[in-house]
Image 1 (cartoon, one colour):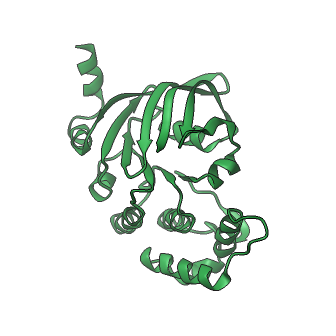
Image 2: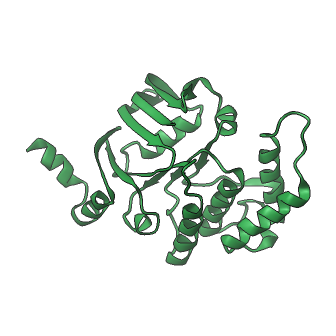
Image 3: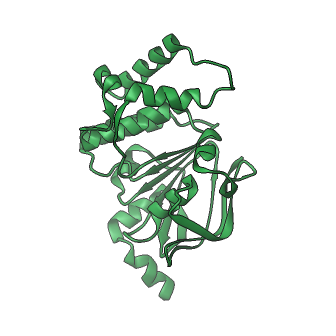
Length: 249
């Protein structure tokens, strides 16, 4: 079972950004997408999650055989898709605990109630693993959080929601080395044969901590090269231009 993307084209306003992208993300694997600014990496994440500003003009996306593009954003989430944002949103007036609890409750069958004691036990254990102060349960979602605290909070949500497929859009952005280590530890703890993870990043350093099974290079709206973790090391050493030069040769 997997997410299968075939000949995907997508635009925002009149600008086409995704231009015939093909990618398969199976359960049990971690894939990384790297690429220069403007290549369409974050657009891909938003299209998969159902962002209303982006229009799919051609191609298909299926998740475990179901047409993902036919689902609304909340339906995609309940079906098991999770997006960690590059720039996590603040939600004033809604505490972290209530936000996560509501998300979990929405996934339960009608009439079934979440066990409060079990919920907080699991929440505190996940927070401890991410070295988050338990006082964060009562704080409004991401309001007044540092960059590192926001990213830890995203991984906390992922740990509690247990998605089938997780898309991490530049989770390393703005992290110092200690926060990067902690966030990566949280992601690695979620690796499973029953879960696929797509890591979007500019830099090799994240992939030293979250070692991918496959690395893909995205440029001008499509995947132009795929390989193993050694491809990321080569990109770190030679940059992205050498791929274009090699293709033109």
